[in-house]
Length: 351
Image (cartoon, rainbow, N blue to C red; front, side, top):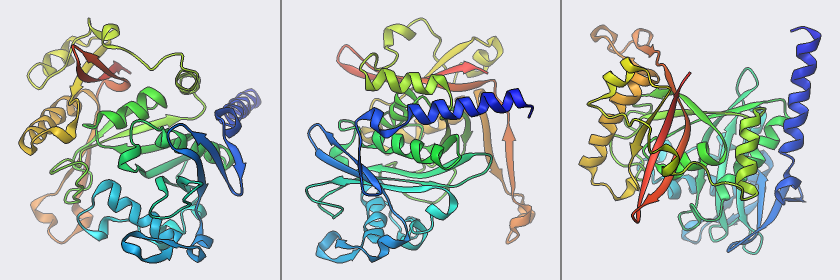
């Protein structure tokens, strides 16, 4: 890197640090964390956890007492509905996140504290490589989802923490059938997605996602990007809530039956519709939608899946991850109402 490039990158980092300063979003410093008065919730505290919080005792569910790290682990079960405790991130692992260069943020009401009654959400981000961090879990208590912006605020503070520790991007995988998650990650935060992964966790069972739905898209959140800053500014200042159905009405919609023709025609922008509310779908309908999405995203996007030759029995060295290239990436998301019914669309643009 020559001197001019180095100066330019330093300027981008300084600009991003200034933009993501928590004070810009109404946060007030509180111990090692931050607090903010959130409508319909009250004063809310956001703080990172570390190994020392194994020594802070609090109220767990079922009236038990345990450490703050145990409570952070229990929250995953309530939010995601894991059917097997092996799928939970245990307290000892949460206690080591900070050492990787990441953060383990939790949110709770100042009135009730970080207890089973007062917790609101959590977000765990591990250190990575090439100045990129890897987010593993972001969860919000059911009664606070989609209305109090708890997840949005956690992401803002994670970005501040990442930049202060030398990272410039955060990536995470998410279930592509859930519109409220796509709205947060793409419409509000400005993330994009280039990669579609088939059956990432195979037999991991989440009640939140339903059966057979561990396909994932990888969100890439560039903290230096002016587009990221503009998206967040539009949301926080009430300038715009994102694209509307009117904005996209003339664009082609990809389906399992026409995706080959769309790929051949190569339009600059294409849509893919997902359910208005995946939780309301029957399991058979959800699986059928997943299968169509595999067809569409598997062709249009970069995709990865696992191939296990017959000869690989009991030999992990022979298991292969296959990667294919696609011409499109998810660049935006539209969630809007038409005749009283919600419609959700991914917006894919050519790279």
